[in-house]
Structures are given as C-alpha cells and as structure tokens.
Image 1 (tube, rainbow, N blue to C red):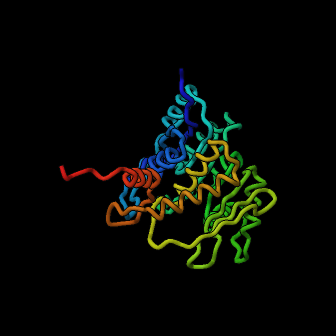
Image 2 (tube, helix red, strand yellow):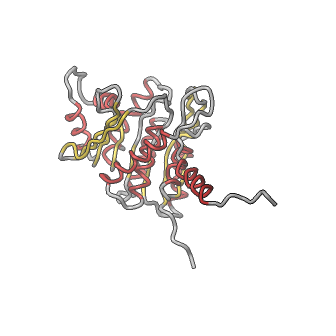
Image 3 (spheres, rainbow, N blue to C red):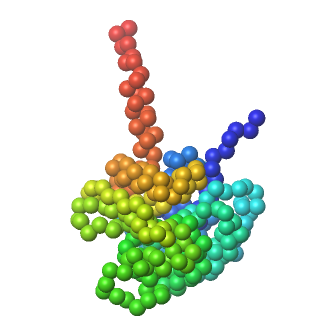
Length: 285
C-alpha cells in the first residue's frame, strides 16, 4: 500500500553553498514542517558566512526545462519564489506559475545577502511587480523594500506611505503582503500582515542580539510549508514567525561571519529529551 505523501513545494531560488539562504535553506524549512521540497535553480551564488560575493543567473531555457519537467510528473501544493537572477527568468517564472493559478505562490524577492546587480536589479523588480506580484498569494518584504517597489510607480516621498504602497500591491492582484520591520523600537522586531481590508495581524517580540544570514528566507519558506499543509495565511504567518524566532534562538556560527538559523533545532531538542529518558548504564559490572 502506498503511504500518504508529504505536501510537495516547488521552490525557485538561488543555490547557496552555505545553505543559509536560497534553495538549500528552503529545503531545511520545508522538512521541518513535514513537507518535501522540489527545486528549480535560478542562479548560482558564491559566498560564505560573511557575504555573498557573486551571483550568476541560470539561463531561462534551463530554468523552464527544470520546472516543466517536474511539474508534468508531480502535483505541488505551493510555489515558493526567492532570488530570480535575471529579467528573462522573471518572464519564464511568471508564465510557468500562470498555468497553475490554484497553487499558492509565496514570493520573497529580496535578500540582504544578495549583491546588488545595479540596473539589472531595478529591471528585475520592475518586471516582477508587473508579471509576478499580481499572481502572488503572499509577498514578503521589509518596509524599505516596499518603498523600493513603490518607486516603480510613484515619485519618492518623505511621508509615511506604507499603507498606500501595500494597498497598491494588493490592488494589482497580490492577496496578502507581510511587511517586516514595522517597529521603530530598537529592541523590538515587528511584522504586519495586510490584505485588502488593511492590517489583519501585527506581531512583535524582543530583538535577538547578533547578525544573521537567512532569517527572512526561513520565514518565507516556513510560511509556504504551512500553507502547503492546509493552514490559512493568517495562521501560517503566526506559526512561521514562531518557528523562525526559535531557529534564530538556536542559530549557529559556522565561520567567521554571520550566524545561521538552525532549522533543525526541534530534532536536536527531541534527541536531548530521549537521552534524558534513557536510564544510565550500569558501569559497576
């Protein structure tokens, strides 16, 4: 008899040799949530714990072949999209996901770890705002990044236009926007979830000390996995934030640079509990 399969998530993203961001990071978060990750490489990253030094986009034809081949074979419960790599990849991904309108799409286009590609970056974000964001179930971006996206359709402003900018994204077709970094308090982290009615949840907790690589990637991948498991967006966002906070609490220092979230902290905690439950060996014999 065939066993019940885990929810399958197709992740488009960069290949990070460290595993802090990108495809490898997504796989860790998916597994922690009981999902199986399928991957489409959009770019090759070169870097370490201090920084990503280079990004080399995958040819769009190769990207399409990766995605179409796997999608013709297996059903997916969600799409997760991170680093895109090139403007050609924007068009390719937009066309692929448009063939599966019933599949939720979680889009996390920004990463502070990815080097800026100059004008190419601006062109990628402009194309994504026109082709991908209107198909997105949930967009994850910081306050600064929302402003950066907004600059593609309005003049820069010194006023607080966050709610208006988010509403513009939602009016374009995006169902939900999770804005990170919505607190001005230096010792607090806060995120706000918007839908067409405005803010529908606001969560905050004490800021952890240290510099991390992969916090945002952990959050967006966990949200995708929880949605793939059948949770609604509101509940998925809450549980994903709790998971991410715990992964940061258990973050590890692999090298000389930033800390990397431990997405398998729960497994190590389970091992510790099992060890405590085991009776001590009799060494007197």
